Image 1 (spheres, rainbow, N blue to C red):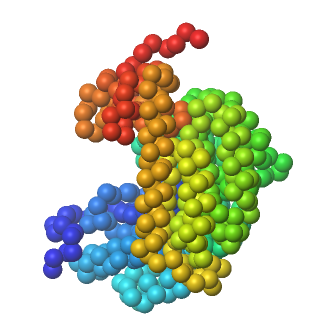
Image 2: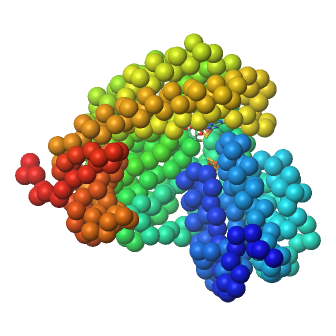
Length: 449
Ligand code: SAH
Ligand code: SF4
Ligand code: F3S
């Protein structure tokens, strides 16, 4: 047997768990939560699937491409089961009920297929004999927050801390509300506890996570209040967050952003489209003018702000004129960075009832046009950094040249500079030049004022 890419003769590690994670940071944290639950019961993480007794694949369904990539990759794990029938293989994550049944049918070697709110069942399932046919658990507790579980983080400077799960926004194209359920908010105290513990462990940067962080509310504490409380944690050097929905991003939040470190001047504000009729059909609940004035206010209030966005091209009915509106907005915004996606019809979403009428070639053309504009504005913004001096958080040695270090400016620009400073430390760096898309700098003394 070829092992389909798996190396023969690799020894299994007792209690070894291999997790492969697709999708967004929410999934990344969920994998850390699952790992924490299993580590508590004596399992251990392994880096290669061949070493594992338990293989878990945490999937994403945001676009068809993401979903089919995950599904085709699951297939290859069948070889492991053939080699060792004791191997337990589970699919986790954001799959629709329909996709879960399909996967279970197509890949009978699987043990379980489970949605994001079911993971507490995993340790008990591992103690049961392998099921004859894949067991499907699409929905767990609608109130699940995994609040008592400290994610098993790996090394790095950044700890992702989830503040909400699920989403109530029901953007018409989006599968998240269906697969992750109603929005729930973690209590302030448990967020603070987790953030404090992470900082004590050396994760000097915290990124608060939610599908729409601005809607956070718990017993009178809103998101800007929460940011202030997290920012006050001793030892915390950087505080970031994602994602902000333009309909709920408040002046109060911009005021907190303007206060400076540890709060970083960075705002990921997905616009999705620039034409009002498309925005309306997407169910985004704001107009392009609202977005423009919000972005202008953010730039004015927050010095050195890094502004980024997400855009979908080729939403059903997006005409050339609608697309030109998006181009106009993107040109005005001078984004630092953006993720542009081709619209992908998702089963059972409201937009799936509309005809997916923009041909793929046209979607590609629109995507490339936007990417060119964003690439150019990002480059202009990076060039503007040259000559500036920033407090940089060191992320580690440069993978290519160990005598150089990489770090990040408060707004989130990556910078490379000579030296071997300690990982997680903060030092002052002057930006000397832009080479390609990389900022290069040199360590300087802390400015006196
Ligand atoms: N909650 C976040 C984003 C979550 S998904 C927000 O609302 O900003 C990340 C991005 O994927 C979205 O911003 C959107 O641009 C894109 N996306 C979501 N559904 C999509 C679909 N059906 N087709 C293409 N892109 C999609
Ligand atoms: Fe999806 Fe909209 Fe919720 Fe973001 S805000 S997760 S795009 S429904
Ligand atoms: Fe994230 Fe994908 Fe689920 S983007 S919330 S992992 S559908």
